[in-house]
Image (tube, protein in one colour):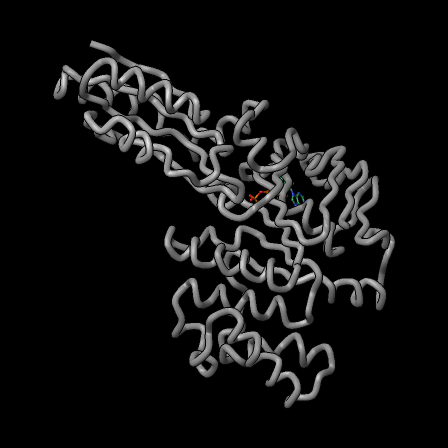
Length: 344
Ligand SMILES: Nc1ncnc2c1ncn2[C@@H]1O[C@H](COP(=O)(O)OP(=O)(O)OP(=O)(O)O)[C@@H](O)[C@H]1O
């Protein structure tokens, strides 16, 4: 288990003291994927750099399995660092080395023979989906492939923990999802603890089970992802969640207005999914039961979190009033929050 206890990090600069991390208390259980989200300058990088001893806390302690990282130095710290792999936004690859040589690099430094390192690197290249590309140079790879090399290299010393510093921020949305799927896969296969920092709630939603929200050096909110998505308490968390889950109110209003003008006879309903409906095909089931209804999906964003669907859907129902009322009652019974935005 990773534990931050009353951790503070202050940088003394010419311009004065910078309180990068303040009074942080955080526990991360083994095998979890823990997301730390915050805007630029919130203190995320400083926080995770204290995990691998690249920074030391000004006050407080950072421990991994009861070993106090902040108290280690020299050979002991190097040994501890072997348990932690790290991946970066800009991959940090060696450009004059092939894929295989990049993955072999940390193994050679750790003193493995070339033959052993090669065998292990081939296995890792395969694990991250780079089989057949071992002899390519980084310049010949796509962004997603480069990050796969970064992941394989980070796994070379068989770490217990993987730190991810904005590892998908330089990738397009589809490649981001592929790399996140790979992280999820290795978390499960290797029972690896992943601590990832990001400014994108999408990343948290897709793979993390727990999240901490940072603002001005402090953790202002933390908990299971679904809890935080459902009931964000702090303003900064609401901003992150709203960016991710619902279209902006102005967009929605415009969409509904347009639709009402186009189909003045419909009933427009906002459906909010909170995650506890699991993956039931509720809307199609509703249509089967109320076969006389016409349904038009106007707009919406439904996401799968690790624990169920979450998001908002705007639909237009047309048909007999009794059927519409029955359908709405059915949705409520299935614990989908419904709100009729307009009824003729
Ligand atoms: N070595 C340093 N010396 C002085 N100030 C620093 C140092 N490292 C970080 N800071 C400051 O600490 C604060 C937190 O920075 P940090 O990089 O941890 O934030 P972040 O949330 O990771 O943001 P970003 O994503 O932009 O890196 C910022 O005000 C930053 O300028």
